[in-house]
Image (cartoon, rainbow, N blue to C red; front, side, top):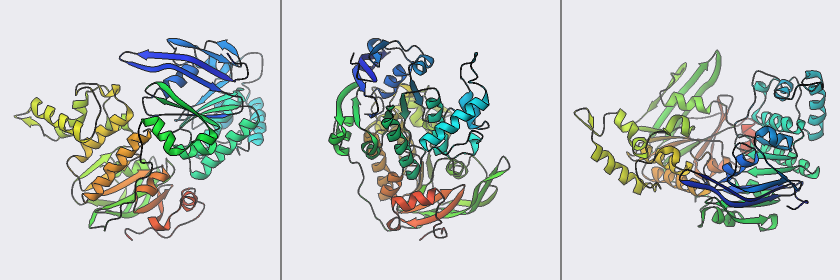
Length: 497
């Protein structure tokens, strides 16, 4: 094991029933570097990081930290070795302060580490050192998502972590907050601390990473230095073929409205979460809703899907509608059910594929086989459990179920969340196919490149309000980021332009 490395993983192999998740993987991280980890869903990134953080034990291979062989049997072992992980979904208690969250889980004993006064003083020093703009008495629930993420990082730095694992760290950040995070990672690097940066955003990785390792099918297919990083080359390594990273703009003449919302408002738990929303989605148009997660987007989808009744105002859908929920596992896919069942569950609920109250198995099978072909769903057979499928193929199931009847309105909420570049490319093409066929799409996404690529108009959502609705030709990334952060006010939102 090389002593000049902070971390060295050699020959890591891990198999689960029916699949080899990691096959003879080598990964080396130098002190002070940001090391990118790339790969499609199912490529083995998550398993490899779970092994490093002590959540999963490898079948073969070895790990060394600072040149010393180690066994990491639990997250506590990882933290003891200076390895910490910031999960995509933050592990914080919203009603507690920054100091209280950081004090949680600290070892008790003779030392006063768990005393909030001691914790607060250290937090103030670390916050000042890294420019985090966090106060120990700040209530976490009142913080922006970017500052909550800083709290998670501060929690690890407090515990002495020298290697941070960041899982999709910019998924909930504005462009400004992402750039601030990159500055923090560079500062950590100058101090000798290292980061493993897991992301699907190739441009961000190029901006911040010193090196990257690319996985495909559980194996390392290459490692690139910063000078060698190129978006197309990296995408090709991940997927094994050329990938369209940004779809050509499709401009069509919009038609009649398929969705009209007027003064739509919602109050929940005594506070307004949607305020006076007025907008329209038209045929052959994509209206993108941009905003940092948690600003009312989920509530808007729930209202439009009929799950929640608005407090005031209303909306009209002209024709049929389909919804792609943001939470694929929670709201769209039944992981314990078969692929076939997932493809027809909404149809069965509406009485289709039935005769005299009985489900016609032969019709369900023919329907399933047709959708597998039309939507390029890759599975060995229709009886495979959804839990055994990759995230990209699970999302293809949702798309197939939503689009095969050609609805006039598609509500697509975070349709590419957690997908790799190959699956993202496929989702984009299906949204454009829906547009070509005359449908209108309400696209709700925190991915600004996605909004800019697909949308004809962009509505910016802040704290449950639409602060602007802009023609795509009047939008750039900087302006969009400022609007999302509430720094500048756009023109008065209008139903159509």
